[in-house]
Length: 298
Image (tube, rainbow, N blue to C red):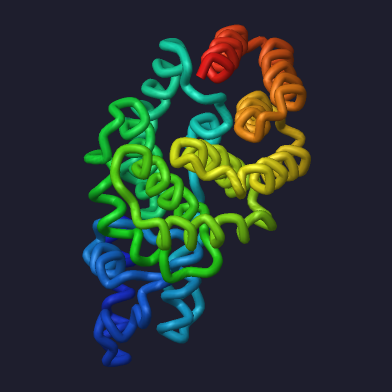
């Protein structure tokens, strides 16, 4: 029998023995939604280990009574593909766009159907983010935000998927009006995640910070930019990965230019150009040079 179907039947049987409705079982839905439980019990999706841990606690039985934990281990190749999606620099040329497209294609073709629902959501959110960025339309992200954003709004600590949904929300803010109060609250919550212990979580978090800085510049709100660039620099030092550093330096240069400090602005832009060249990213270096000229003229 299919693992998902067998596990779903067990969970439903144990839940009904305890005379718990799905609504009562999921409580405030911050760790497991009624919709997610329904899909798990019907054998449509496999829960991740954190969700399975929550389910076992609600049922007051050990996980081993439900499933062998080895059955929900992620394939190594899938993990490589997932990390590759986020470790790559921003897509500023056709070759990189093609690499990302090929990665998504391999994941959907070879792994998606057997992934736990939370990993499927991660892939779908990353794909939606990619589509929003390329199309400059929010349509690709609206469905996921409607289904999951309410959970994120009510959380204090974010999972990796929560961070991805937050990033999708900020990406959509470029192309639609947003409420300043909700936006600022989410920014504050995001900044509180800087102590995130997961390498993958830190990768996502740094990308979010870059998007937030861009939105502040887009909205002509410069007061928090310097503090956010400092957090981003801290994350890069923690990970010893400085591929996002040219973009952060360029954004900080925009901050100093806004404050009419041409000397500091020029230094930051030049640092960004040099570092991009050292990383072998000549096209990015050229784009930063172009950005500097445009900013000076405007």
